[in-house]
Length: 326
Image (cartoon, rainbow, N blue to C red; front, side, top):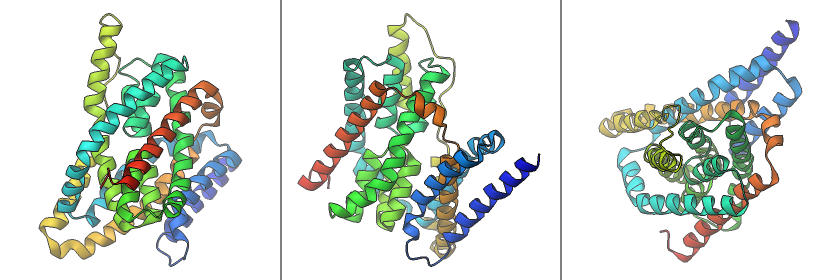
């Protein structure tokens, strides 16, 4: 009991420390998203508390959803719509191409069909959210889902830290980096984290394109359900697709400050609050990482995930550098 209380105190201290640092003038606070994620992973390994892991698993997605909603108060809806429309074409193309390539690669590597589907969908749409939504549709069991999640989590953590460095090395503009993050990084959390480290314009572009991309969870899940049912003689999944309602509230938040310009000052404060909340969410995501799940990821599975991710990243960079993606 005493250990549980001590662990809880340490856990809450780290949350408050990260939260407070986002409001400071610390010169290197743009590294905070990556630091928060790593601190969560390290602290989880040190404390090894099942109780706190349960809390972080339960709250991480909720905190992340609220953080994204509050970010909406800092964006003009007109700019969001423009970014969404501009990115619609290559969003559809990239999702389709990534899904097909992922499934072909999985077949080439002789990976389990369900795990291959989950990795392909996670890479194509929005990482863990897509995996969680599609797993019940194809009747994937806990182990299959955990393996796919583990591989995607590893690449998310790498992308969050590596992509800002890569963007500066390639001299990408704010707009270009936002596109790269949205199209090549798996989870919304890592997209927002990398863009926060790069700049405000990249945050607008990256967040908007990624949220538009996340909406494709629903139609892609339906298509996969139909294909899976036909391939398995009418067998259907055992769950419902989780709808990303937080995207609707993100749009509503943006609409409020767009229609009422006098609220923009307060909107910026709420956006800053969302950024600090987001850092806490990344800490919680890092804390609930399961090393057992990551350890269970086989070489063929991680090879599929890495090769597909690298291919998508290189393709986006080439398209940006050659002007195909404006």
